[in-house]
Image (cartoon, rainbow, N blue to C red; front, side, top):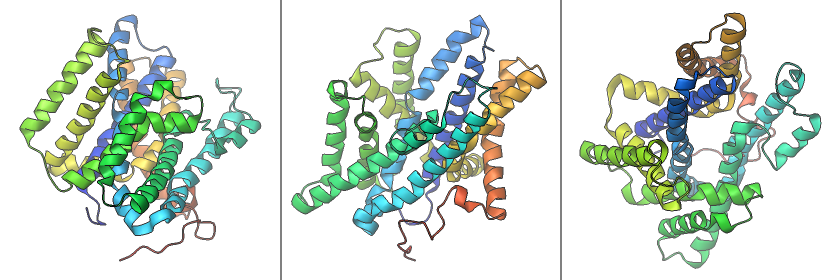
Length: 346
């Protein structure tokens, strides 16, 4: 992987962010009580399928670039992630929190000014857990790499960190997961570390359509047995690994084989996936409220299609407008307050 964007990775991010937005739209429709009784089973099935692998996919994709970033920056990688992850997390947590306080009489939110202080150690905005968890994993993994490269440089470090991730995942039920750091790392480090291992072993290799179809069959079969037929336990660590890894790899292999307009469209969404993730809830919630409260639309298909489509388009338009009127500080720290001022190498 060079410094240029990798189209299949952007496409995979595109698929991931579509699933994120759709999942939040669908849950918003469910919480609004718009589903009919006969629709609930399919809603829960789709919800379980999406949430079984879409966020692990993003941890995996983030892990793909760790080695390149660590080799370039070393320990300064932590400072870089404070700029690129913690800064937008902080800014938008404050924005969302202030909005919830201002609109508290119209919503079910109960955020207070005191809660805003807590964002420094615990996310108060539901979907921001991922940003904070990703930051903690980057910090944790950087420390692990510094230690391993100093004392065990002759060993296969990517394989070791994956084994650490697998071990933490298998023992997570015995850990004090009331602490967000422990929960974030033990549940998600396995996917991030697998991205590092994949990058070091399979970098540049594209996989056949037959292998992709085989993984899709495995993924579909286990999803059916766990979430539809309910003949396998959803709480099993082994089954969770099979479902999640087969789902992630299916997306990766599909994106490596698609071309043309679809690939370009998914890659475009992938390039804006961070910004879409941060701000889409504002638009999806607003669209649902307008459709339901103003236009009295109760058709769930209209809510799902419009909510997802506009939840992807509006954030991109917002970012473009923000950049054109010099509001880039909403997503990127001004240089004067940036903690990582290392210059990018040509």
